[in-house]
Amino acid sequence: MWAAAQTAAVRELDPASSAAGSTSVCDAATQWTHPTMLSLVPLLKLKGMFKAKGGRSRSGTDHDMDDLEMQVVRYKPEGLDALCKTTRFSRKELQMMYRGFKQECPTGMVNEDTFKDIYAQFFPQGDASQYAHYVFQLFDQNRNGHISFEDFVLGLSVLARGTVTEKLNWAFNLYDINHDGYITKDEMLDIVSSIYDMLGAYTEPMVEENTAHDHVEAVFEKMDLNKDGVITLDEFMECCLKDDAIIRGLAVLDTVL
Image 1 (spheres, rainbow, N blue to C red):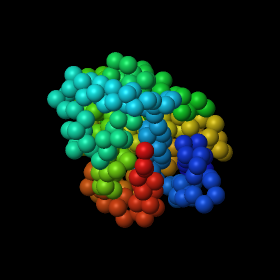
Image 2: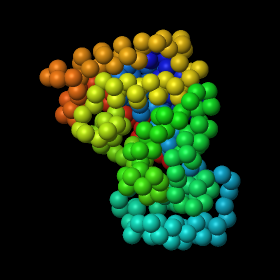
Image 3: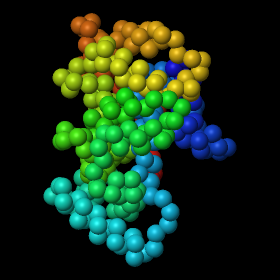
């Protein structure tokens, strides 16, 4: 059930993975029977969320780069060169992402409703609103109800270019909804359920009422090492780092924009 849902999701997210001769993301997805990886599969779409539409002249490119310097400084004391240092993206990659970011969000800031609308474009077969809410909360580091371009690229840098430990830490924070340092069964169930809602028709066979609940129970049996009813960051890391399928799956997020 979970493997089928994951494979279908990855095919939707990265159709090129089915092309002959390409690295099979779908094959990797069939190994992702852990909610850690299921929660990260939809994030493959983030790399294209703010992809610029159409071509630009050289003068337009230069203008965008100047505009980026001004826009970023407006809400943070960092410009393009600073973002090159604080992220793992090149100047060219940042410039490309900002062009798309500005097209979708002319004000330079994304609120949660806009973020949900953009996510919904990638998952029209389901309801992505709740999952998008959880992801938005992680990107909105200042808790001001908006994601700046800097917020976006700092988070995406971890997901696309971070170490295994950094990506797992990000995944833990996604599940730790109330940010108290522990994952409860209710929190994991909320995230897993939101993913199934988002995938919608792509969860074949159809999800039964207790599927997510039963899987969360199985995961807690494995990861809650001291059986105290919650999963700590140390427990989460220890279990995930021992799981070869998770480590291989995380490599899928190592993308070239």
